[in-house]
Amino acid sequence: MASTYEENVKVFKAFSDEKRIRILELLRGGEKCACVLLEQLDIGQSGLSYHMKILVESGIVESRQEGKWTHYKISEKGSDYAVTLLKELTTPYMNREANNCCKI
Image 1 (tube, one colour):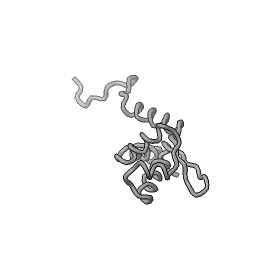
Image 2: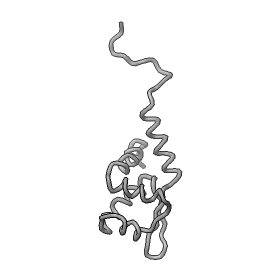
Image 3: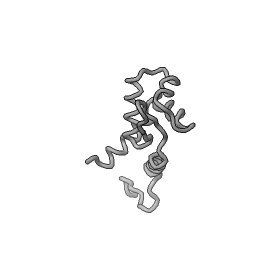
Image 4: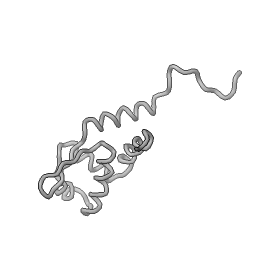
């Protein structure tokens, strides 16, 4: 079973590549077939599969099979999780004393 840290790293890994950001931009317009993504991107089938695997494993993108093609869309739940995660990790603790190493 993966730890919370491992799951969180998958989310940030999904955002750490130009091609994956471009894919997410395309998916903002709604569900897309892999064939449409291949037409829109300068990428081969194996490259698309690699990037989609990362996006799906992160939970940010959902996939469904229809015939021989896979269709992808942004996951509302995954998107909400990513936004919440970033906010939590970048918001300073407000209810804890400052942990200063030097006491004056």
